[in-house]
Image (cartoon, rainbow, N blue to C red):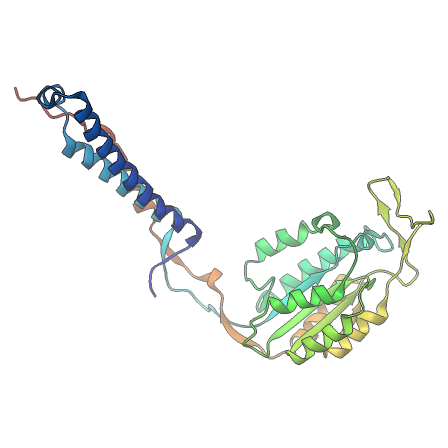
Length: 321
């Protein structure tokens, strides 16, 4: 396999070399103009006879090479090595988690959102052999993303299933009509009339949607951190958030998925895993298991050596004894 850069986003720093070159040429031109302005060329040459333009240029070249080596080191040039069992079979799964305020209801402890997060983490571990979330095999990063999810992460409150499903569909490879599934976790309080049409569109694209209803039909109050009270409507009445299983069941049925009412995390995960295992799996390469040979240290050492050489190299000519 060929060499590659791990952090290609840093390669733009190479463009700084063009700026350095322009500044260097501008400095040389400025020096020549300054010498001419002084007047007596022979006098100026006598005054700067110990200055070496060749050494000055050499120092610039050393600095530029050191900078280029530093960019290569930061971008981490590496070469993929051997790895065992890097071929995996799996499906692309998008987890769509409802983080609206109603998910803070405490009809299940500590609240709906926290229990949903715990269930997602269990699902990630259970499906680690083939589950990619979100379309990645970096489960550590995904776990951090899940744990940090909260209602403050969205600018506009309200649950809109159609937008969530459409965004989930855009995450998939459009060239593949298989191996795709969405796990939608919500209390079912949808505020959109286009949900079922979107579900039908996803079914045509080969996307299976499994839904998880979290909460109770009786409902619960929603804590409001801004007022240290419960959320109230325009009339001042306390809002009761109830689980709407009907819409979640309809979405799952429309897309050949299943609906699971969350009561126990392990049972919910088992039901989802059983359903997801029925989806045909594709073969993919888990690059997180590759053993890479990196070369950044060599480039870093070369960079420092050049900088040291540039620092100790004088601009003045050596005086003959």
